[in-house]
Length: 392
Image (cartoon, rainbow, N blue to C red; front, side, top):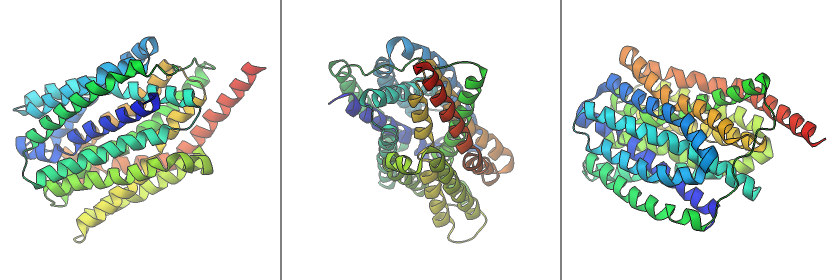
């Protein structure tokens, strides 16, 4: 198995880990009687841990490569997940979630850098497929959680057992890293300057909007179904799974779609689709029937729309020759939106209700559709001009 294969498996296992955290939130909420406001605090703790770790991870990856960072962070993430499963109270869970956030932040940076390195080494578009593998893992993990809860398995047993399997799998996988060689590192930036830096930040903001809308589904779709629509915890995890099924299908088709339509038009259509999806999710809270069915359709459209936004952003950075620190900067801003956003939604939900809070990702889906194509076109045009100037 070459670097492309084990990198894809790394994405898939990380998706499973994400599902074991996100799809079990409704059951964890019921186990510890957390409530929307306390869940928002937990998600903020997760965000703080990850945002502290990400810039450090970028510098470490620049020195070591994304591969070596993956070797350490993947097993550690499984251990951190087990700590959250064993937490006996909300206070202990908060500490465990901070640890999970730190390790997950470093892991996400390592995955992005490694995927860019593989794309450069193979000279083939693989970014959407890698993220499709991640969502496939999330769907598989979500399905396991749903099945386990239907069979009456306790949420702690599900999470701890899943973490143990992931730990064994990641330890076996990381042994292959050195024997399969190390793909190319991220390059050096083709240009600097405040104008270029502003475009990089703008790309990060686009990624943040995409991750916030995705994070809203990861952390709040199931809770919206249980707390607002009156569904059972098992049905709540099914809503989560439906979102990631749609995302998986579109991500595996994402590379040819982007090649045919171009990155800017792809993102415009993606944002429009996600906007329609969030419109249906919000509508579900205002009607009597079919409430859950309407919400599921809405989350499916939201997942399909947001599926390709982040892969397109990362591929644009890779094409431009961005260095590991610059890739880390965009990743930090983007994942920061995905981490802080759901916590913000929790805070708003605690004061104004979850349906009102979901207006935040709905508005950002509109922003992606309206503004992201111009940002992406400007960045790609600037990068091409800079590369041309350096070659002459």
